[in-house]
Length: 411
Image (cartoon, rainbow, N blue to C red; front, top):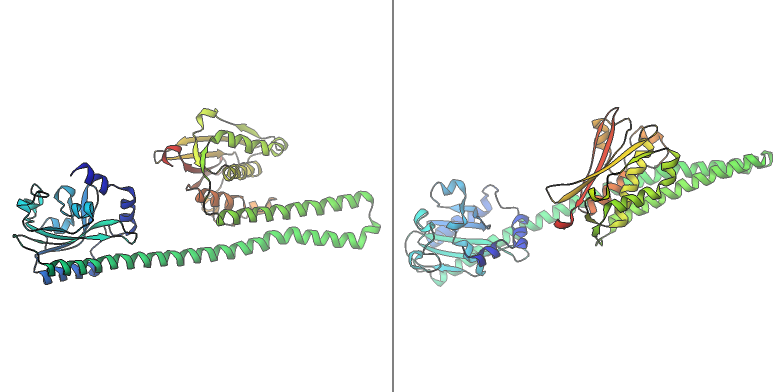
């Protein structure tokens, strides 16, 4: 195989199209087998294949007439492929006698699979990428007629149509699943708005009613205390609304302006924003050296919010006083993992499984002031940026919350 053919076969977008059609390494199916049998019968050819070509092999989604072991293997090395040339040119390949054809005369399939004459038609993805070939093979020299070529073109179009229909069906199923998920999320969202806002709004209403009825009997100090209570509840309601709006903006965002991030300094800014809470709770913070924090790709404002929510949780639910430790590591899969460890009570496996479910609050944390949207925001941000979230915990020891983002070299 020449370098030029390999480059065509290894084109990333073409390989992505091969993955997206979801046919590679899948079982035989009657919809395709019917077409290969039909091609063999109409053209009186002993072998017919639906061949999908990768850089190192060709996989047969359907085959009729192949000898063993190839019939069971349903693939050959790329060295045995005539179909690679169909993909390389995007044109039908018509070979009357492979033994004397300059393109394939040295191909080991001539000896190993008794491929003497070959007629292959390109197969394309719904986006137009060349996937492989629909071909017939004879073990004798053969002159392929215009009628043979026309029949194979028609049958190849049927294969391409089958691939397209499957693609459209999957897209429709994915859209339905996405709509169902969005509807469930909207339902949970509405319940969250109702539940979380009801408490502060009810509190404001109640205290306003008290002040209206008894203000003439209250001392100035009591009135000031009442006003402060109303102000705190209004601030809580406003914070809930801000979080809900922020979460909605994340879900609506299409093109996120990602760039290289110096993560250590983003974390430092988040700690600075929480300086008052850190001081009031007497938090001990352990930070590694700046050079031990790998850079990543992300959207700075959102990533800072991830740290804000993780740190706030560690302060609220950590030990008395809290101790929080930060770390990071470069993963072998092209991502960076960042984490924060607290010295809290720890979480059971059941509690851990519910943490990142949108809009869920654990029963114990529901009794602590806050609105429980922080981890929903973290999940939404990290997923939008292409990463994952995680938690590990041990009862009586503490918890480690983490998230991953693409490393600079992999973006």
